[in-house]
Amino acid sequence: MAEGPAKTGVVVPFGLSRSVAQELIRKLRAEGAFSLEPKARMNVSERKFTMRQVLTTLAEGTINQGPTRDECNDWRCRLKKRVAGRLVHVVIAIHDMRFLYVISVH
Image 1 (cartoon, rainbow, N blue to C red):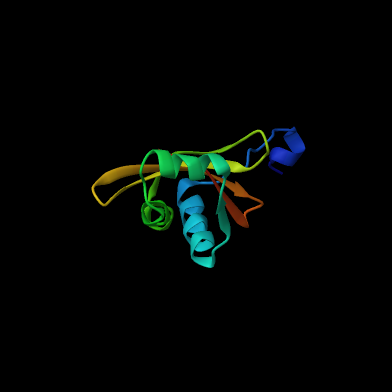
Image 2: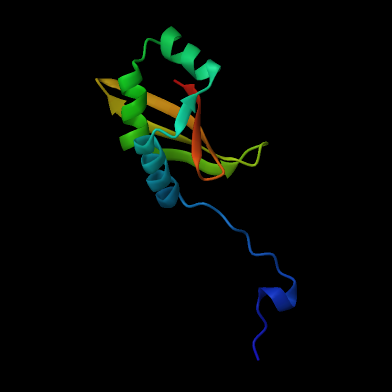
């Protein structure tokens, strides 16, 4: 009988792949299950982005960093997308696989 991870005491890490995270982000964005943190709102204004650029990045962007666990045990990643001639980076946290927090926009 072969020994599996449970019998050998080996820890098998669980993760969130980029493709699964990207699908989830698009789904939650379409459902309106997201909010912009105050810092992200300030980023949008100061850096002269539009909400359309942020929303398009959430809906169509590709993950170029992460996902990794953050200090709150949420999945954090950065998406990028060129929208209206500008490269937009949006850092998000996926909370309980049910809600997105937009952390920063640059």
